Length: 209
Image (cartoon, rainbow, N blue to C red):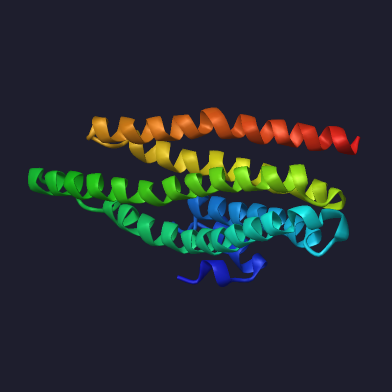
């Protein structure tokens, strides 16, 4: 659909419109991509500096992971829109007869599961990004530590944002076992990673003040 290749003002304009896509999931993926890129920038400002020569190989490896993640997250902007569209159409299906109601329920259940899959991937990517940025913040150039802090806050926000796109869909599922399994995965990520991100942010803040 090309959302990730739009100019910033165009993306924001479409996001603000009544269009079903992009929505909170795609926006979360984009925010996470930006957060990951900020961490990557810390690596870029560390590599090649004599002061950090001992960790150059580690920084290069982290940067390579970020390069991949940035592309994956931008792809998830597109996939979130693609995977949500069937659910958007399912909501508009008729339910005047019992047969129509049954068909709508069947289609909805499948579409809800599909719509959850991309936000779950976004959440997993955010967790990995937080781990990587933690290394950049702890070992990378002190001149760019504030950017690591911004990046980790972006990824934390994207993680929590994507989770809402899972929970709103699992709430509507008839298959409660499947829904609760997804909720448990979200809960586990939210129990650990926002706390880790906040700890790193506070550490950076204390270094700057």
